[in-house]
Image (tube, rainbow, N blue to C red; front, side, top):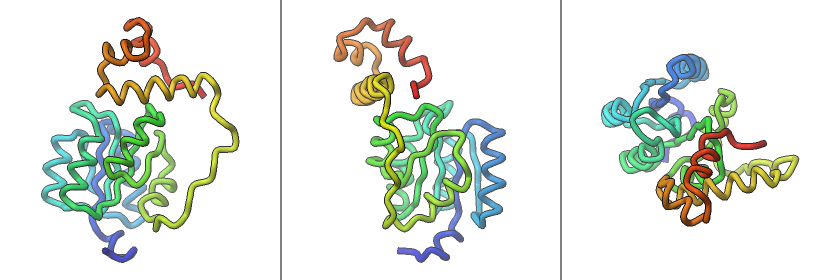
Length: 181
């Protein structure tokens, strides 16, 4: 396993289809000492990953040409010690669990603070995150449950609606909204 100093010198692959966000984050990570290569799609990420063999990756969950979770699995297969942070604008417990199971070391909501990303990429695993100061609201718990079932059904709306015993259109409306606080 690489030491902390060796690990920071390995390339970092940044995958996000939001070009302005990707550019800002790329500059900030480069200032922190990372050798950043940024791309906007899964297909570009696959080519760059094969070429670079990155030691770090920051991957957006939802990309125009696919799901970032698939890329996490591929990156982990290419390089078992790669440190991957998953970013998403649609944070929920189900996708966080799926990201960690796929091999991500952390899962952060967008717009993520670059300091949080750097901390996650360089954490040694011995520190535990603090518990949230307030418990989730009932609406948020419901949202999380729906999202978990949706992920278990491989994002199939009809199957999710059947399992939750709700009308498909109702489920579509719920999925189209942002998560409650």
